[in-house]
Length: 94
Image (cartoon, rainbow, N blue to C red; front, side):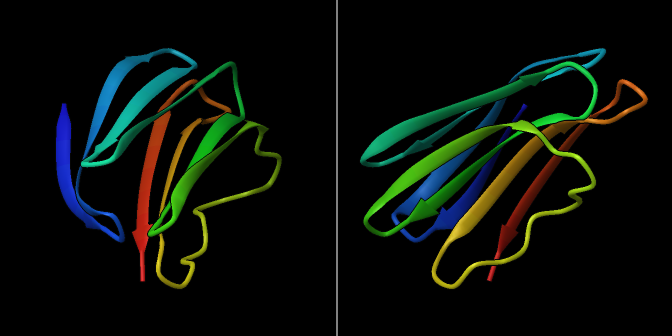
């Protein structure tokens, strides 16, 4: 499953590459690069932030974290596994 969207770096595509019980993985392709993220296990997640000057990933336990907050001039992508084994994907822009 793929989603196209506008990012600070131009057109981008978010592709969900794996979904299963307690597992989710994705790839983000922009004209100038690619980022990957994924989570395995209950309550785990990855966040990718796309900005004009680059991108960054962070993965680990989410704890009580919910949907990511919008950031100025950025697109934030969060893929997480719920405590009940579901996969959750958020795409947030400002």
